[in-house]
Amino acid sequence: MKAAMSTDHTKLEIHTRNDAGIVIVEPRGRATLGENSEILDRELQRLASEGWTKMLVDLSGLVQIDSSGISALVRQCTGLTRKGGSLRLVCPPGRVHDALSVTRLLEAIPTFPKLSAAIESFHAPTPKASTQQLRDL
Image (cartoon, rainbow, N blue to C red; front, side):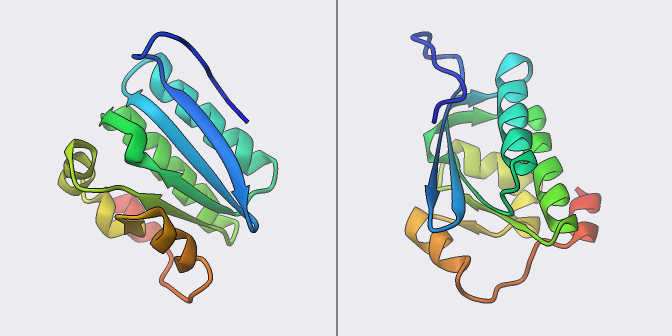
């Protein structure tokens, strides 16, 4: 599935797929103020409204994220947690990881450097992001 597709490399593209009941969201490009962060937010909301409760956002394809993109992730994590679901992130070291670290999002949402570890985490008991941690961001 593709949420947005463009030959313009600055426009965010999102690919989604299902892996054993986990929806994997793979944004590529920039999740920054304006249309790009709105695309990400709408796609995450669409998936949640379809009933997905296990969501994994692989940020490996992002070259940049700002507060609007981070807000979309926080909103989704909060919504899923309230419904008994969970959100995990894949974020290897780099610019996006640094942005998430500065905002303390890495402390609030389970984050993994590799996709395989993040998928495996859904099958092992791990702490969910606390609503209080998300409020503190």
